[in-house]
Image (cartoon, rainbow over all chains, first blue to last red; front, side, top):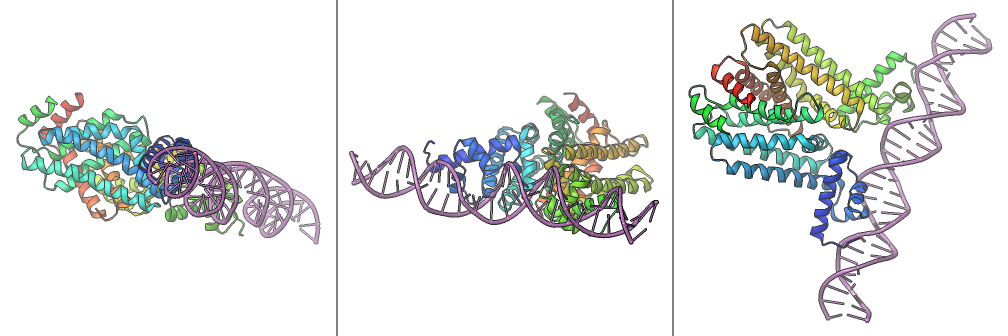
Length: 208
Length: 208
DNA sequence: CCCGCTATTGGACAAGCGCGCAACAGGTGC
DNA sequence: GCACCTGTTGCGCGCTTGTCCAATAGCGGG
């Protein structure tokens, strides 16, 4: 087939891997599937990656890293912490409702048996939590939010988001994307809004 | 080997399956592993179950069903809704922090490719939510809790619990069991304890 | 134009998988 | 004590998996 530069080929392998993972799941993605997706031989994959574990890890890092970067960009555009959190939820939840959450689910489960994948998964999850934590912390110093433990609040919010999105992908039809967004926003309200000044918050929030 | 009655043998297969799944993960549990665990031949497994999918589904249902029954019993003993919820969280979280949560994680991920396992997983998850929902609903009528949507509140609480427990098992060391229990209780407080402004804001939001 | 570097091939390899089946064995009733 | 019933065996089948490697092919510099 076509002769590609190492960088191009690596990228092609990663994208082919994600295409297959999207169809069959990350855990059921094989070397031959990836090669077939590219239209090349299977040996080529191992010429660029030491093991299948590494292929999956790099591919997952590529996809999930892009999502993270996108979320960071969306958050950076919002002026207030309240709007940042809303933007984050809106950006996170629908993305997860597609095949992306199935990807995460597979990665988490597979992480128990694949060292490289476990490393990537842990690192990325920590990064997501750090993003939420910083939003919450900023909101607290700005007086928009009130919480005694931003770290715990961030974990809880992320857990609600993950848990709800997981229900959508694994047990379809019980709840949908809209519920994930609306319910998570409701959770954020109960979690972070101070009880005293209600009027100003309601105004900024409903403006969207 | 020893000659067992069909019922005993089925039970032995289920327990052997769970023993292997505990070690290697549910998705990586093979017919031969199960047979070796029992000390019998592999053909025996297929004499009692039509497919490996069914073996995994039945084994998972056995383990998860027992957990559910245990949670129901613990909840039934508590007098007030508040104590019921506390008991539920305390019972749920530590159990999930062991290998049980890895079992759920594997089951969820594998459900995408194994029909029988998917059925069981969906049914059980709905049962867990129903348990929490009934506790919340009882608490509302008893005046202990305040929420505009017990169903959503139950999903959120379960999501927090699942999400946090998942962090423990998949990304060990970031948070521990104690945090799962404490943080989920804090989430339940913020979610359910009567506090006027939160409820009204949530109502306006879900209406969008 | 050709040569060499290297991306790519394509299959060998051992191991492992789910599944099915003819043969075997060991309690049970006659 | 014998025959029958059924739980159990042990292996074979076809297929898939990750990994590896000698052989090949095609582009770029001399």
